[in-house]
Length: 300
Image 1 (cartoon, rainbow, N blue to C red):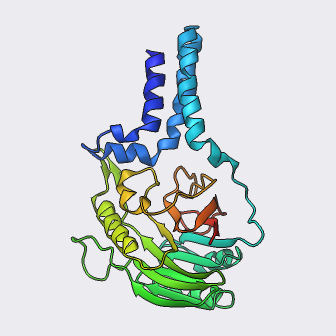
Image 2 (spheres, one colour; image 1 turned 180 degrees about the vertical axis):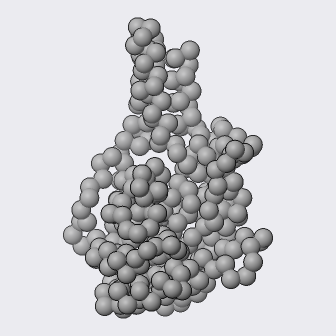
């Protein structure tokens, strides 16, 4: 039995799509926390040792090797920004952040070229604008998302990712062209709807609908180089984000778990690129938000 469970864990790591999404979006729920399936190894090690089973012990190599192949490289990420890197920061600052000015100063201190924010409130926005103006002379906001840049911005517009059953005024998508030293780059900032985990499973219908709309916008983007920064409310393994993740290159090294800030177990804040390379992603120190900021270095 232990050997069969080892085989099952290895198969699910490689093919999580085998788990159906009904009922309760169980497949998406598993994919959201996919790296944590590795915890099955020490659990299965106990009966293997108690039974002194050579077969079960050997079978443990299957999930170990599989997990290492899929996620081992993410453990190699460094904490330092390479010289000359184009650095971007993504942060859901929380609409109940008790000290937005301190959060703004912390983000400014990263020295990033571009900073994307979500859950900006009308009350907190002046604090961010004041604290970041000197280092980021170019910025744009649409609804509750914003973009601060060291480089000129143009072509700023709202990206409509509003699910059909959500009323007017729900503006959580933005697109701008950043005129970087390496050329023009289309920058998207997005905050997809939250998901809920309950007794009936994962509720992600609105998130999935919004992801499809965001994917359509990116697919229609005329510029080759695209950077997407946002709180996408899931990990890149979640099939619900496929309309977006299938259009973008996966980041390089770094787990960079960002949520919840007090005990991060998943990276639901994402930095993705098209026709550019995200060489590494890392979590930054906590602010007054329930998310950690994340930073990434890019080759444009």
